[in-house]
Length: 262
Image (cartoon, rainbow, N blue to C red; front, side, top):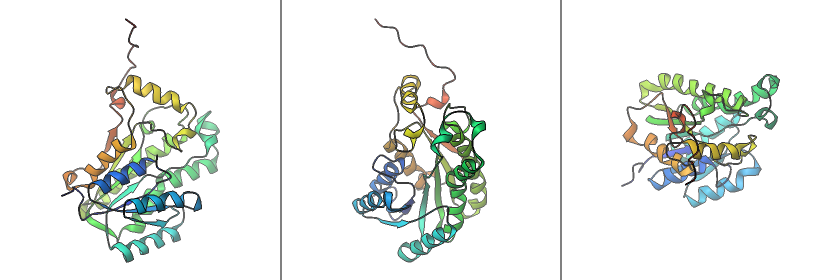
């Protein structure tokens, strides 16, 4: 038997086969979960529908900035699946010009957009799906180390990830009486379509692999393994926390000296 047999998981944020959300969906499916995916617009619809078909799941359109779209998603899920046991929030967007330069030049509209899509969307999704979320279920959001530390060029993305992590804690309190756990997974840098928008991202990958205790970068599958744990009954008493999947990089206080040749 799989850890997630009989459970249904809604995974948001799949863009293509390299997405963190794709790695999570694959691992949840591998352990027995029925997979439901969402997509926004025609640009990613084909990729999402292809993955849903591969995993024997379903997919629905959803624009997290639209309350009407969220209400439609909830109605479709209730009609086709009844309840969901797991909600994975893997959604973020920041204007490319706000991922470089000085934070203080960020536009008001850019900040509002980044906050709405990257952070408030977790509140909006939870509110829309509150009646189809099963008691004893699990909600998880994907975050990053730049939420609590300075990561040059991550800029507003880090600020809104800090908001996302705070939302995780407050939701965990509000939903705790129903046994619903709410956690975040802080993934190390992974080469995805969105992460490559960050200036000098390749250098980030190189530095993490050199300095992390495990001496490597992580993969979407690594994140997926932790998502399986958080979606399963093994984590029934685990909530309100940020779980690092970054090869231990977050624990480093100083870069080690490069190994000398010979």
